[in-house]
Image: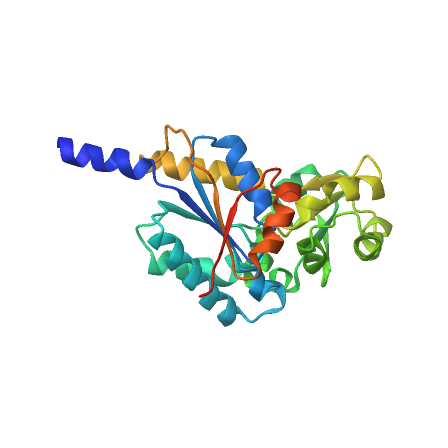
Amino acid sequence: MTQVAASAVIHMSEAPVGVLDSGVGGLSVLGEIRRLLPNESLLYVADCGHIPYGEKTPEYIRQRCAIIADFLLGQGAKALVVACNTATVAAVADLRRDFPQWPIVGMEPAVKPAAAATRSGIVGVLATTGTLQSAKFAALLDRFASDVRVITQPCPGLVELIETGDLQSPALYQLLHQYIEPLLAAGCDTLILGCTHYPFLKPLLERMIPEHISLIDTGAAVARQLQRLLIERGLLSEGPASETHFWTSADPIHLRKILPTLWHSSGVVRSFEL
């Protein structure tokens, strides 16, 4: 490798990782990336002005993801994390086709680890309507859950309440209780949090469910997959990480207000108007 080529690789390794989500849920994944890969600089786009993706058509979601991915590529992102189960289902195949040289990591509900973890043989899934109705989710069940009973629970309205940043509101508690109760009554001992917003509900959920019930999400697994891809491509950063940059397609003031709650830090939030 020439000296010029080597310096280009070094430069690319210090480029940021781009992360997108329909809203603030992907901050749960961003936190896992920060824990595992503290030297990586991060860019985050919350498409809050178009939430919830779970009730949108696949074509609409694909269009939004293509716009945001193109924006993050323009910001110099060396890799993309689609930190949204619904967006992954609708758009990740098209993104990988349209950006073939770009490492892209998507999400999927944690059916495999949940099937391995359950002792009762009954697994509950909390997710958006879009995720639960997808062919990708059906394929996961066929592949990994043939020996267990899986009970799915669509959760309309939950994402919108989490987006307010008030994770202790009576309305949130009431709606979550409504969705959890049938799963508990059916004997589920393992619950899949099939939306990146839902890990923020863990403290509330742990007060609502018996101690023996496991909560499983895929944020840490996504961070590990990102790490693997960056190592394979020689793109792992040696640091130090620069300040995380945030964009939102809704009011930036709202995201600034809730970042300390969901990201445990403040940050520069800009408007994303495409």
